[in-house]
Length: 363
Image: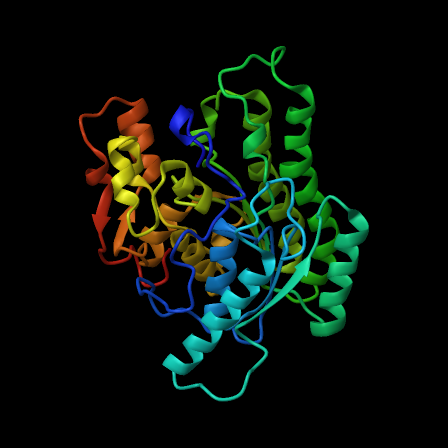
């Protein structure tokens, strides 16, 4: 979540960063989920952050996960961060799958499930996306989950700048990075996904549809982050006859790698940043949205969510999982009711210890 405040403007919404808890060991906090062994997922934009965390959690549940991005060990994308690569993400996915198999007594030789496959891809290049999907089809013959987590445009955001004063090239580039890439990917990937009923498409964005009714103080950013809600709504209609589900999903105030760097803290010391930015007390690790996607993918009744705007905090309550620290942060409740609405409360009132899920199925 990129807030309309100076301290948050450096947050990468790719959502960039498995900032700490996207390692192989499962720190807990997730209810037993359906086994995704045999399922195939594509996480587009998985180099870092929420994208990386979602890939890791799908792998932990047993899925074979293709992870894509533009930063590799040989090449750095326009985002400019060489510290995270797509190869690292694939290795984390595989390690999580292997650790989960050992923990469940399924250890032994390498299996197809719980494995990460890195495929460097520029999702603005149709020929590269077409080749990617053809490879998945050739190697697996199926696609069960598509996560569109493509972004990389935070450095282009100009908050509190009138449209006639902003850098037009940068604003239009945001549309390419956050809208065109999603449409291109769906165009090529969905014919493979609809071969079997039960497919899931997750459009990652910044802010729920409700939260984004308020202007995000930057026209091109505002438009870019509202479009995924409409993409999910439209795809829900188009996928319905094939038994597919499409949702939009947002993290809260994300403790991505770049956000932690911005505050000069680590995942272990993140609370030290609260003195500089009090709202950071509601921040969540990338693990939370990773667990949200894992829960959705394993839910046989996920179609009830189709076409809806969801948040990681909302799904944590519904499915009964927690963040890495054992709490359930309600970022959007805090911002809407306290920061915007003026309620006399603090972040701690919206960061509750785990409680029972709303219902066994999360309905």
